[in-house]
Image (cartoon, rainbow, N blue to C red; front, side):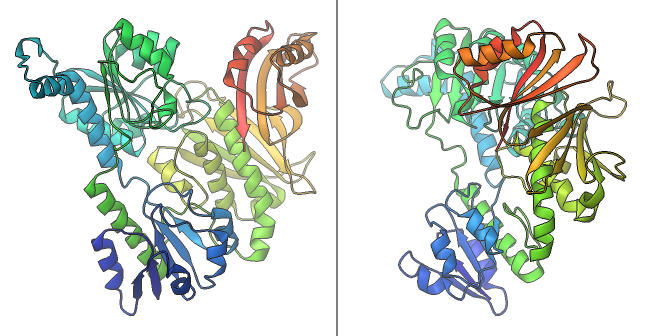
Length: 531
């Protein structure tokens, strides 16, 4: 077995591979990589080596690529998948480092460490103005309770802090394991002394911290961001810091890096670091060892962990299952984005051929669609079950006979916890057309047919004359073109509930929702993005 280590990883990881009987571990340079990869079974890289389609063409025996780190932008996933090459990353390897840096920023704000350190080196002994605050007894609000958020929660408990959490995709039971009380976002903002961001960047979370949300925060509260710079509207935060409504900000990330023109630069109540929260010796050691273990386990035992592409299927299996997997993932994404209910259960109903093509793959594709709408890490049919289980999502499956209409269908419902109030949740049903394209057949029990692609404006409204015209006029006013307009209603009675899926052209911003929601008959509006 030949393993190529193209970029520097931990010595412990390299040694683990060399200890395998009969394995040839080659640490290459950029100059000799092409020559060495010709007979290799595995390739380990970090971010420096570009794993292109051309490089993969020169590696006919390659079975897996291991990325020591989270991002896989330097790897051609489509080319690897086409060649049956598993690509594995190492998510969570820097979770402890980021969590600890979060506390470094929090403590620096609470005890004014940078200001006092600067004064000392300038010859001033500012003891009289150094009154800080204790962390004990304070409330920490965590927006996002994934790997990093949960690590922060564990450390907050040691500081004797009360921890609130906002994460629509984690169950109450999972949050309780970290002593976190799940609350609505508005309550978290209003009650927290510190608000720390640990959520993925998505259309729903971009500029999540803006002028209205900052206004809801407790006066003098602190905000921490070691996740994504785009989560914060920087101009609004700068204004809140200048007025003193926000006491201070600890930032490791910015919308543009380096942030030369950011309004946050130069503010005395901002503590900033250059996107280094995960940059520790231990984190790099961990991801290097982790990727070596994953490559070893796959080559030696066929165990796949943290794969970011599809597993190898036979040509016939892939031919049959591929269109339904696409349907499953897009339906999952649609219900995830459109639902206003925190999902604790996912119910999947199969009918016809759908139940014969490998429901475990379709189940995982549904979960990938549901989770990819809110998570940074890439979720697919390989890692979806573990990620869903970690977040407390339960899956219910049933096979049924379809009596009317399309014979092969898939229905996805997101449901609240059993016994937790309304059991209606949100559902959508779809099928695959003769040309292999996914199509939606009903939303919330209301029949309508539409394409499952692109940017879709999902509307609920009272069935009244003129609604379609008002929506079209409003979109036109803001320069948004309509590609298709699919309609459905519960009953042919004026005033009954109706739904629409309006597919839109080009780039569309969430700001369009406010004028749309101003139309009297509209009761709900949401932008859905189905890539």
